[in-house]
Length: 496
Image 1 (tube, rainbow, N blue to C red):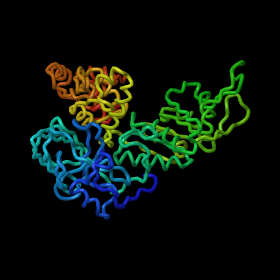
Image 2: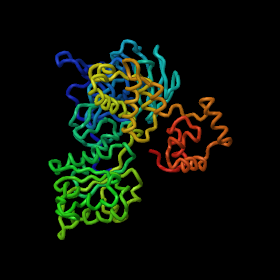
Image 3: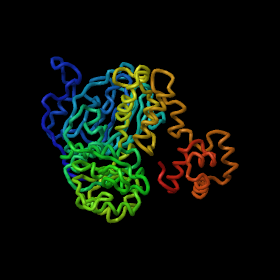
Image 4: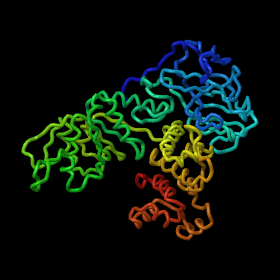
């Protein structure tokens, strides 16, 4: 990881255990919290295995809060006893204040939570039913990424809070987008912010890697915003869209009257980015021969417009991105991209999914019809089943895919809340069992009596000229998402 990451140790909080959300004149200390927080040897942020709020019926605005279990057994419920598990807005270098749950339908003693090393042992002792990863249970052990539901009341995700958090100053309200547009409060997201802060202070070219939809352009914009060039232009271009045969003209521009009389002078995207940042997305799609034309730009900003006898120099920061293996780049181009940033996907940021979904839905609520149907104030009404499905899904195109799923729910939910509709299930690939329906079972058995293997899948893809939807239909699969999983399973190529 770039930059220093140190453990942030405790200073005594001026008002430990305050009841969050009440006026200063009525704030009070919660039983049991005062003594724990007065221990100066505790880190200023809690660390260890914990639970994050992903959905809460009574208090939807509390998503993102985290409770960490240090030792002994803690009780999760709506009471305020000394042994209760309290949730906080936890951030690097700061323990948020706490408040108990307000939900009246949850028992005062709903769960008993005990730390067992890096895991949490859970016992359901309340009146509400419990599920762990979709399965009914009275007890179980949670490791990071596991999902726990208290029937119709609460959805929690198991998390692990590291001892050392990045020293990145908070500049935005908890759970909201930061000035660069990044949403999330998990440790992976704060590590990303810290790396962006470090890289923004450097001058060398940067290569951003990550799967499609993981936010590469957003990261590039953050580098620009956090840098000394933030008042200059940010010029972004997808390398795959550069017209074949006109790449040089697009990159470098042309002199006046070249190649035809009357053509105006054009600066090209390199000249346009001078004084700021040039971002070339999907640079791995750029032909190797064209990549070679960037070498002098990467060295010292030198380039030459078509039809111009003299060289020019652009004062710019070069940032590139690819969702492919960096080895596809021309070796001497890759060697000049000295700084690297790998973006985490949603699978690595599972506790942030509810916050990102809320952010995306608020954008959708600019449509008055969406706002009127699905929102109570700033929060959308989301069914717990939908939230659990989002948390358990294995994302392929990450935030882009999440946005699409949410729009499908907006379009297909009949009531006042966003639901896990049949359309959403299909988009998530939940109907992907090869033998789920009799029709699919008969079609599959007839076409492939010995089952699917890598050669069969590849043959279907070849016959469909790479069209995944058509190939899935030919194989008798219920959706293209089932085929994406087989492509990944057999290593036939990177599924979108």
